[in-house]
Length: 297
Image 1 (tube, rainbow, N blue to C red):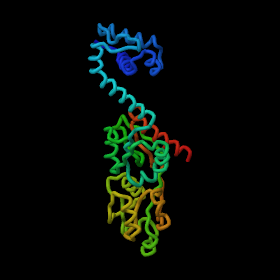
Image 2 (image 1 turned 90 degrees about the vertical axis):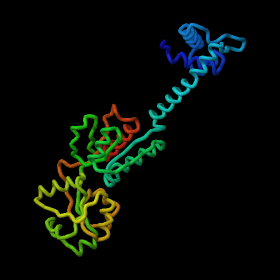
Image 3 (image 1 turned 45 degrees about the vertical axis):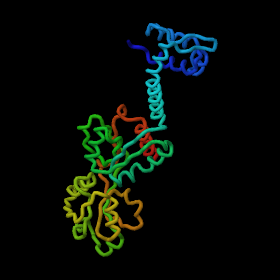
Image 4 (image 1 turned 30 degrees about the vertical axis):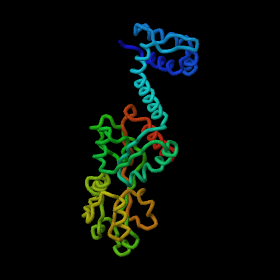
């Protein structure tokens, strides 16, 4: 027996109000529509669920038993639909973001703040890691957005969309005190200093290695770190010369010297997300916010 769920909804509402007209008012439909729904349900079930009295309607004995069995299910479905609606209207939601700390901070922090002010009830989780690992998590549905350096070979991920946001500018940098003590005239002389580089196989390290190959430079790293914040601390403590994207240095720009900066034609910064038909509503709206931010900029 396949009974229309809406018939049971009407049935439970009539039980609640014990009156056809009041039920019609609460459901914003006509009294005749309520009556027809009850009659249809009774025809399907093969018996009466209500009997009329001077005040309205009362459950029959069979109707009482029916109600006891279905009331919790209808309430659960109603609650589920209400929660679903809140996710659609962004009264609730969750976004899981991944990326390198510096890229998350310099690339999407501002539009992310704008989004959280509009939708304060969205839960956000942020995790850092190696791009290859984060992209696999995105493809598996464990993340919603990944901030990354481009290009990225995404052909193996048929469910992922790559969105380019801006050109990348990278640089070597040192503390002002360190460069005074260890002056260099060109990049070849960086090997005469202590070199602090991103850890292999990070995307920044790949970009640097490609640049060095084109410039016929071989760098010997003294330190390899996976955290840009640690690299900046090492540089500010006069340990050596670091390498990162220039946008990541805004918070310490008055304390450092940029030794060399470069852009590459094919190197950009952007985000990866699941294709629109696979993404949740909150993620779709945050991606819109990010794209709009860079469109305006």
